[in-house]
Length: 173
Image (cartoon, rainbow, N blue to C red; front, side, top):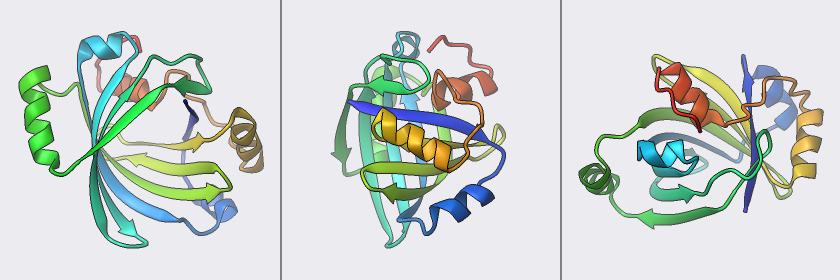
């Protein structure tokens, strides 16, 4: 069970100071398929992740997330599998599912605090925005939120739904 919250922010500068040194920096491309899946509040994603710090490496991850159990602090079952070739997976998924519903490029910095993960994410491109994703137990999430003074808007339906709205794709997720 994955538990996370995503919070819109204007910038990361004050947050970075409180978090210290990142454990990882990356650039990734998230490609979502299946408009019907999104409408049913399920997500099928291919992520191509290029880690640039602390070492250079690439990975492709296929993820399926079940419907969210709760709004705000999101709870969802998640299944993941790694693949060798992003372009081939993308070609197969496009042949089966049609064109992607969302295709986003994201810059991320990861910070780890015990078993809690904090990521500063910036969606790049025409519909750019920034958000903080916190993953852990509900108590850890609330503690980190308080510590970082994150009073921003919690994306109750998640960053994907927000991205859909910003790009004019109206799906109730």
